[in-house]
Amino acid sequence: GLVTYVSFDGEKTTVDVANGDSLMQGAIDNGIDGILGDCGGGCACATCHCMVDEAWYAKTGEPDDMEADMLDGVLDPKPTSRLSCQVFMSDELDGIVVHLPESQF
Ligand code: FES
Image (tube, rainbow, N blue to C red):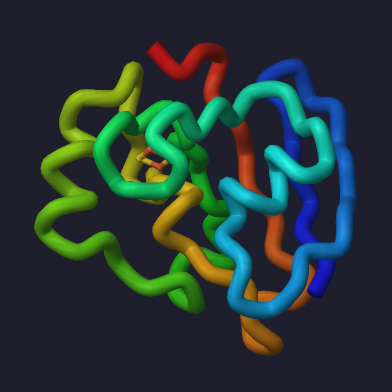
């Protein structure tokens, strides 16, 4: 499904991410700056922080406890912050918009 990544300075990039792939993987595969994903998706680095667009946040669901702990440590966390390696593409999320932070650390 389609994912639109919005950079910190407002540049939008829309790419097709396969169902089952994480939004972190989709960003890496498509060369999106602003998501690093240093740990490869293990919920251990928090360099894949994104802010889900408010219109989509309810559909992504809330972070689990482990992810929430990691989100406590990111730069400038927001109520809609998620680790993009823990959000997986599905038909339901087709068209999702996520905002990228100014920096991952
Ligand atoms: Fe490391 Fe998401 S890629 S926490």
